[in-house]
Image 1 (tube, rainbow, N blue to C red):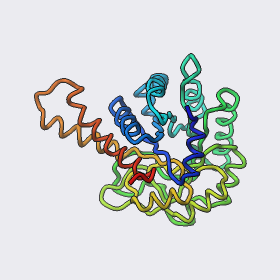
Image 2 (tube, rainbow, N blue to C red):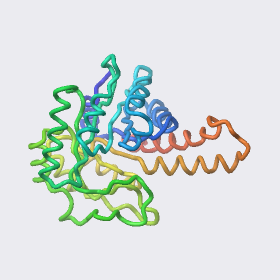
Image 3 (tube, one colour):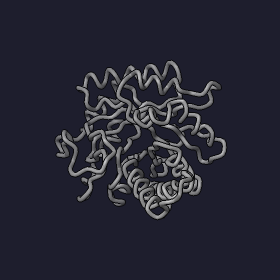
Image 4 (cartoon, rainbow, N blue to C red):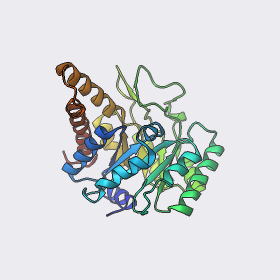
Length: 296
């Protein structure tokens, strides 16, 4: 099986992006896996700290491992938005006893920390990974874009979208040089969550291009739910290699489940009630993967 590093390199060479989709339950898992299988593209399943607590850290690693031999291209697993060294260590150590499966990547998110503290903590996470499971990819976030995966009435408090507040090329170069990270998730006009009644802020495409050149490592676009297809295409062309989607999946799940319960008030079999929710997630993931991989 190709490694995640190899798949990222191939995506950059082809000017496409790998889709990263968060899950909270088995319905989300199958929605993502089935869409990726049908389109025959690699995919990353992400689990935040809260999602890992709900699913179980080792349990989600075993779940992904269970389909790796059956799914080609491969399904990878990422410990999304991890806020402490201890939780990073937990994810890195969560491989199965045979050593053949576990988290392929971990994100340490120190974006709310002072810069120097973010650098120190990120470097500690990377050093631990290199000493224990060197194949694990370490990603870090630079620039604050919020923390939630919700429907929002307004841009999250503390998120500043002016050009002077986004990550600058020299900052990206310095951060990567001092930490040694494999992937960088910079603030480029993106925000966590999805705005309810207004378009998402436009991505700074020229900045993405400059950051990729300055950083020297692949870039990740976090929380692209709601961004326009045109912005996504241009961001990939400028240097984005991985794109995160979560809120759109959650909304699709909620709406399909609500409709299922309303239309079948006497149904008590969970697998029947939840089937439309799986299908709704699969439709969202299929649409995004088609866009990211230029299959349309």
